[in-house]
Length: 77
Image (cartoon, rainbow, N blue to C red; front, side, top):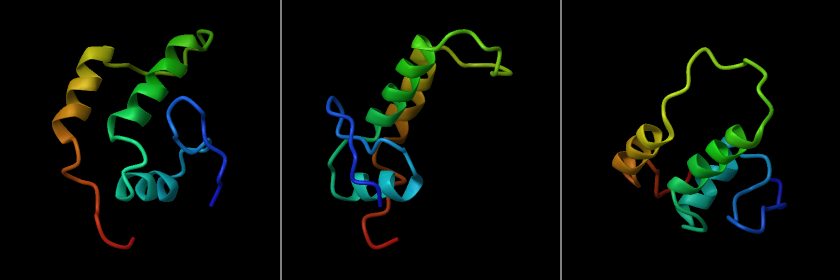
């Protein structure tokens, strides 16, 4: 696995699912951290018309908050 991490969030630099699941299991970062990170990158990126649609930030964060730790496996993957 990639051990490079972003300094601010502790997220893996690649956001591969295996690395995210490991981070969730070990509680190195919250479930909200990748969502906030991706939304920030989308906001900072130049407009490239790559999205069919994008929900408002507040709605995305509300969905992620509702999910919380519910779907994060605690055992081995």
